[in-house]
Picture 1 (cartoon, rainbow, N blue to C red):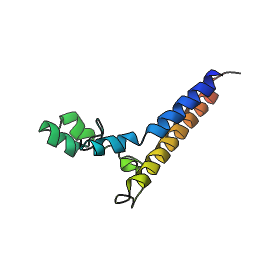
Picture 2 (cartoon, one colour):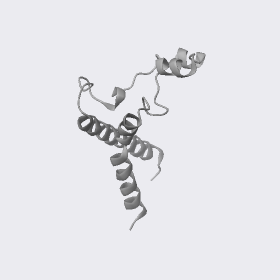
Picture 3 (cartoon, rainbow, N blue to C red):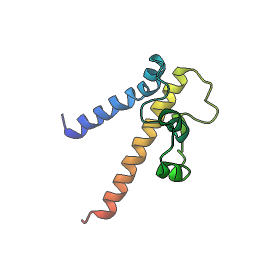
Picture 4 (cartoon, rainbow, N blue to C red):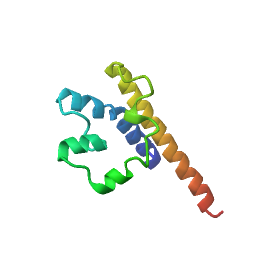
Length: 109
């Protein structure tokens, strides 16, 4: 089996496992997934917002906030799991596209 095939299989497994970030915190009553906190959640957890985070938090907003589409906030977990997987696929395709385009421009023939 080629290394690229192994890589793609591993990537597919990771994409399929991406809904665990939604399901496990809910199952264990842990709030949101570890490390995915917004400025408000950090204020609740730590008691303050670091100055750098506070200054830069308005600089970027996610294209697909909370890995779900607009209007999907009240949907079932199965719908949200689908949105997580679709977000992962979109993210992987965007990254692969950027790498291929950069490789095309930077490589010499």
